[in-house]
Image 1: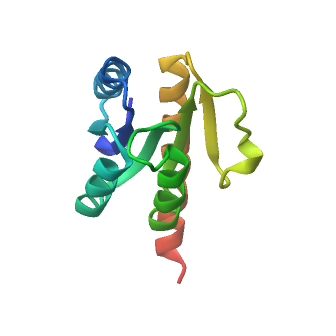
Image 2: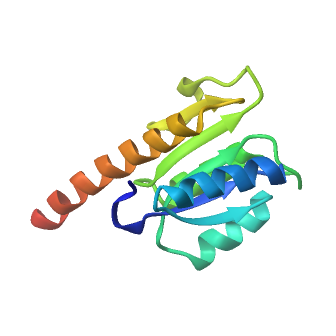
Length: 134
């Protein structure tokens, strides 16, 4: 179960895939914001400082890709959970920022949720230590 009602931003242009992922995350206790494009996602990022994680597709409409979004999000929220999903077979984790996980479509919802849980749990375990030591 998602700790502390963590907020996840899901960016997926395929409505059915977006709905299924959002529904599965909500069933696990996550608060979910959804976007169909990078520009819509940037709006959520600007309005919601509480975003704890990002799940983004790579190929999105509007001229900016999920990888463009990932770079921006990683700069704004370097400690947040980050997952990339893609139907493309040419992506490698080594080409992405540290701690970003790639899932090839079709992916297991259970695997994506488990990875989010793991990344958020790890982040939450580190956060108290940061507050204890200047």
